[in-house]
Every structure is written in C-alpha cells, then in structure tokens.
Picture 1 (cartoon, one colour):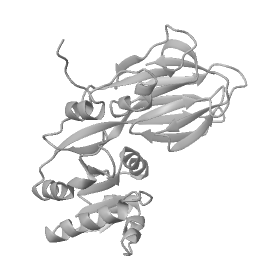
Picture 2: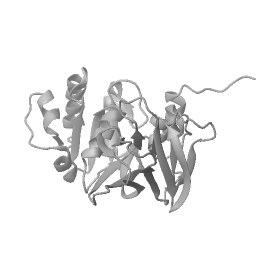
Picture 3: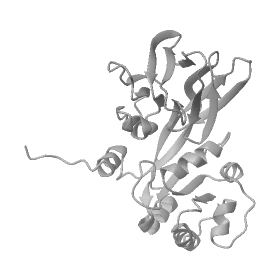
Picture 4: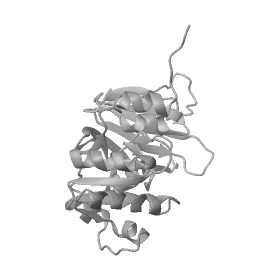
Length: 284
C-alpha cells in the first residue's frame, strides 16, 4: 500500500493531491492518506504519520525538502522508502515536480526508482541533572545562540579526543543530506550521500582558522558549553529545540536507522546538484 502525505498549507497542495489520487486510482494502486492530507480533498482518515508509515510499503510525500524533514521527525521504528514530489521547484530530496504526476505514478507502479539510504544523526543530550533527551536528524544538529547577539563558546571532541573550542555564532553537524542545507550556507563542503561521513561547520567563527572538518560517520562527536553561565540551544532539523548549559553534554553519532530515499535513475544526486545549483561547464 502507498501512504500519501501532503503539506496542507501549500496553496497548490489540494489540486496536485487530487491529480495524484486520480492517477493512483486509475492505476489500481491501493493507498491511504494521512489525516490532514485527507482533509484537503474532503476525505476522513484517522492516520497520523507513524501509523501510516507502519502499514505502507512506500510513502509519497508532497511538498518540499522541509516537508520530508518534518515527516522524518515524526516517524518512529519503521521508516519505509520516501518518494518526494515537490510542489514548487526541484528540491534536493524530491524525485519529481508537481507537473510530473503521471511520471511519478508510472515510476511507483513499475517500481522504476532506486533507493538512496540517507544517514540519520542520533543526538543524546545528557543534562547535568542526569536527565537525557534523544533527538534524530536527517539534515543536521545545530548548536546556536538563539535570539541573543552574543557568540556561542563550545568545546568539541571526536571519539574522546579534544578537537578545539569554537567561538562562533553556532555550530552545525551535518549528514551528507544536510551538507547542502545550513552547513553549505555557513561555508561547508558538499558531501555525496554515500560518502560515509559527517561535517562539522562553525557558523561565522571568530577565529579564521576554524574551518569545516569532515569526519567518519563512525565517529562520536561530543559537544559541551565552554563558557560559564551561557545557555545555548540545540536543534534537530530546525524542528525540535532544547536548551543546553555548562555541565550538559551533547553526544552525536550515526543512528542505526536510515531514511530510504527514492531517486529516479535518470536523476542521480550529481544531476540534482547540477540543476539545483545551476552549475554548467565553461568554454575557457
């Protein structure tokens, strides 16, 4: 069965959803809708994202990269393959645009897509009080200053060995998937999805020699607050936020779970990069 989730606040979501459902029904493809998605077309469904994922062999997520990130945050033990349809321009995580619905359904019906396993970061925030909180991120975990104008001072160790102390606006630890998001805008490199690495990128560092560091995704990153009395904020995919103070420890590692992302054979990641970043050759 195919599960369908749409970004209900997108202006074109209802019309694109109706077209998709028409094509799915014409192809005889069993499907179910998430409850807010069903409301877009006047239907009723009791299913939240985790329940829908639990009974689906494929999730069609309609919206953009942000929609896929929000869905990934809500999924629990079972993460089926995700087939993204962008309502807007081509995104890094979506297969097709909203003007390619027949092609999307044809791909689903024929299973004409490949699966790109995308690593997730598991972040465990250990409070000085002994409490723990676990977050998961498809894109990145960010340690930031919040709304204040002061610099964030953090200390970072990799596999128990001190790396450096950062004095910056914040720190981004990104997966290959997230290397084209906040980390890229902060000056970090682009990582290929199968590179087996994470990247640590300081945001506007005070020291010019503080640059992005690419590490193995088998490493464990430990982050702490280096300035007494300072409170920083930890976010996962900009969806969940937690406060962090001196004495707290943030441990980041590759999750045992991954997100299986559907990709079209004719649109590998290198082609998506070329289109999204408007790269081209030269005649020099």
